[in-house]
Length: 291
Ligand code: C5P
Image (cartoon, rainbow, N blue to C red; front, side):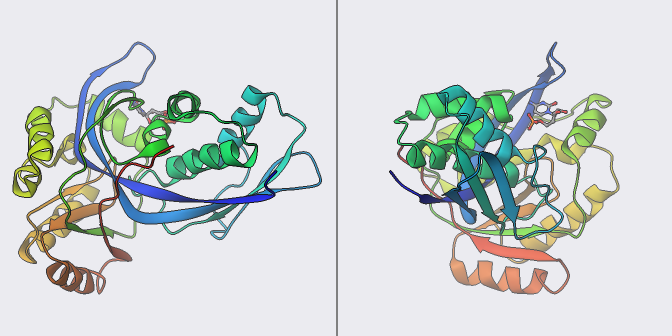
């Protein structure tokens, strides 16, 4: 039996994000093409002498109690598998910016589920882990295996897509964060004028057509009237000026990403943007994990 396991918790970006309706449970009906990227937190799970789940994190302001999705995922795993007596410490090393729309908290929770599965040699398959993940949060199911996928429903109904064409991606997050429920509320008050061409994006991915992908990147949350979207628009136009094939906000923001064909142009863009913005990183698409 293992005493310790380590998992990478990869961030996601939205190549498209559409909201197609409001559900009777208060959630929104989503249609999004999701992509895992190489920026990752690391999750280490350690068996402890005591009982219950505890967590520590290198970012002091991140809660380490039940408000943290990683803790909720571990508790859910233990209650589902009938191992309530177990003591596990979750060590979270965060690299993914918080409040960025990159599913950092969800990625941590998904990594905890994969890690608990290995630590307790539970032998759960991908579908079983995704079903548990869907109970923890809307984006957690996608983060279990990641890669390139179409997400529907709350975000938990997944259809695997081919890997997106290889490229370099600059991710830039301004100093502020945006609250997800707040942006959904603001979205409810407007009529969306445009929707992404999700089917066209799927076709471009299948054909391995990077330009076809970048010309179809679109996020309906950018339409929300919010003065912070001005900063988002500024970062997008800077990325395009620096040679991006396309640039959009991810999820409910505040991070923006631009897609580049070559590493040199992407590095140059990141170096320029990092003079003005707090977080800037060059990442690459990651393929689906096999579980
Ligand atoms: O499921 P999760 O806890 O990640 O969602 C956070 C919040 O985002 C929800 O409380 C809800 O306000 C909003 N949300 C939504 N529709 C979705 C996903 C999230 O309205 N499909």
